[in-house]
Image (cartoon, rainbow, N blue to C red; front, top):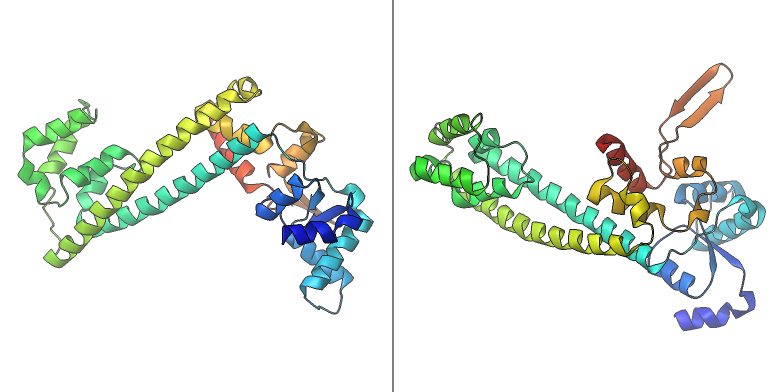
Length: 303
C-alpha cells in the first residue's frame, strides 16, 4: 500500500499534506518519506467542511477536499509538523506510555477500594494512599478482616517495621484498629468473593508496579542522554519525574513555538477570550496538547 502511495504521489512530490492527526503510524511513515505535514484539529476540520460543503454532505472525499482547500487558502498561517530527534521521540513515547500505565494502576486501585469497602472497611481506615505497595502487602498478608486480629500483636509489629511504617504517633492507633478489624464482619459469601478479588487485584498491581519501575529507569537513562537534560533538570519543582515529561512534550525543536504565547496556548494555560458588546469573559482553553497541560499543572503544583 505504501509503495503504491509513493508511486501515485510522485507527481506531487514536495507538496504539503493536511491531515486530522499529528501522531500514529501513518504520520510516522509520511515524515520518514519527507512529506511536509500540517495537522488540523478534528473540530477545526469539521468547521472547514461545514463552511466549504454547506449541503451537509459527509464523505471521505469531501473531507479530503475541504482540508486541501483550507490548506490552500489558510495554510500560510498554519505551522507544519516538525519531526523530533530520536532521543526526544523515544523519551516522549516512554513518558506517554508510563502515563498510560499509571492510569491503569489508578483504575485497579479504584476497583480494590470498592472491594475493600464491601468486606474490609477497616483497611481503608488504616491507610489512605492505596497506590503504595505496603498497602497491598497488608491484603496479601492478612487477606480477610478475621485474619488480621488472629495474627496477633507480634506479627502486626513485624509488618509495620518491615515496611518502615512504625511511628510513635500513629502506631498505637493502627494497632488498635488491627485488634478490632473484624468488629463488623461481612456475610461469608461476600467475604469469600471479595477477598479473592482483592488478592487478585493486588497481584496485578504488584506486577504493574514492577513494570512502572522499569519504565522510570529507562526514562532516567534516556533523559540523561538528552542534550537539554541539564536545562529541564534545573527547573524548580520539576524533579526526576516531571522534568523528562516537560522535555519530551516541549521537544528539542524550538521552532515549533515561535514565541512564549504560542507555547502557553499549546500548553492550555492561556485562557480563551470571549468578547461581544458589553460581554467580556474568559474560559479555559480545551484545544491544546492535553498531556503537556497536565504536566504543566503538576509542575505548577510541585513548585
